[in-house]
Image 1 (cartoon, rainbow, N blue to C red):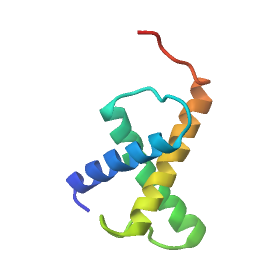
Image 2 (image 1 turned 90 degrees about the vertical axis):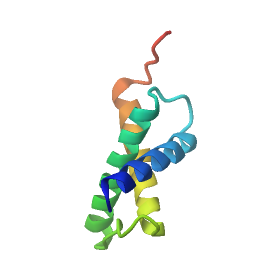
Image 3 (image 1 turned 60 degrees about the vertical axis):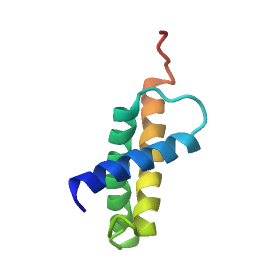
Image 4 (image 1 turned 45 degrees about the vertical axis):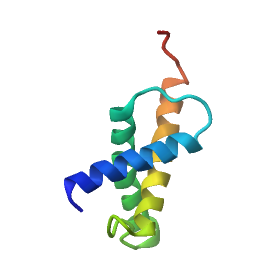
Length: 90
């Protein structure tokens, strides 16, 4: 996939993952995109290690989206676990 496809995948997967997670997550559009890209990489790696398949085949493949969203949910969960659910006041 091209870099633009990774960015778009990251943005959309990050938005889906944030919608699935309960509570309010900190960060804006850039943090969401980075979480999604990290989630796609983590999900692809986990798919290869656990199931022995290449789960990040192409932009329009269902396995790519599932791996990206699951990975992003894991990353958001770990981030909330590490920060203790702290919220900043504005």
